[in-house]
Amino acid sequence: MSNAESEATASPAGPAARPAARGQGEPGSGEPGRLGSDRLGSDRLGSDRLGSDRLGGLGRVLIAVYIVLALAATFRSVYQIIAKFDEAPLAYSLSALSGVVYIIATIALIKRRGIWRSIAWGALIFELSGVLVVGLLSIVEPQLFGHPSVWSFFGSGYLFIPLVLPVLGLIWLRSTGRAAAAQAAERSPARTSAQTSAQTPANPGGSA
Image (tube, rainbow, N blue to C red; front, side, top):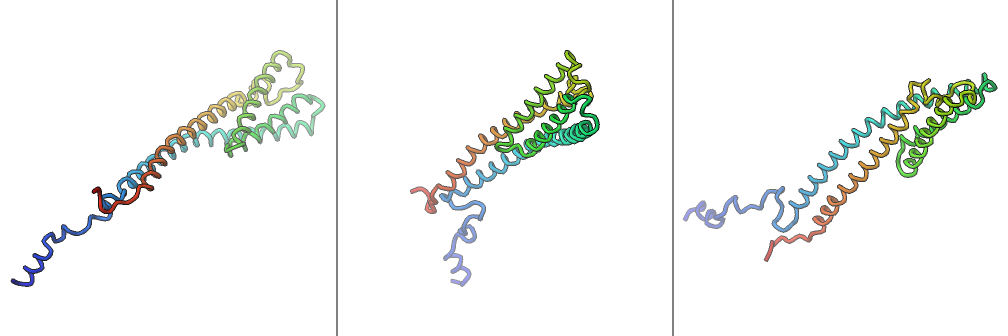
């Protein structure tokens, strides 16, 4: 018997007897489960990032408008208080107050994590209440102010942006809060499944 025939007889399976490809893993090793969990986690992470980008786009617009309004209200009120405070002290004081509220709201919306989210809620609610109260008083009792403030006539001097902006801000805060809660709820089952797959003991020999 030749050498070639002897080698063929010693290893009849040939290349087929080699171990499975690396990507397939051993029968009881649990590798397919881990790979599926990793793919599931990656898909959910991608959808989470897409949702965050959409909400972030609206948030960037709101923050940009808040920055412009905060600067405009603050600089205007500073000039009015320095140059002619005695002409309309209440109106100019309200304008300064609105500038401070806009600055706080802008910082809180940028951070919007932990305590800053509560601060953002409080600032926007206070801002909306101020616009409504001052706007109503400026129509019913205009002599109280002497000159219009930022919130007079519901912010008509600023194209009603002071009235619309806090409403949009509250809607955005509510949307981001719900999105964060939904993402946390979706990640929890995936994380539990991944941990279970990782903790499954390997069984190289397969089932008995």
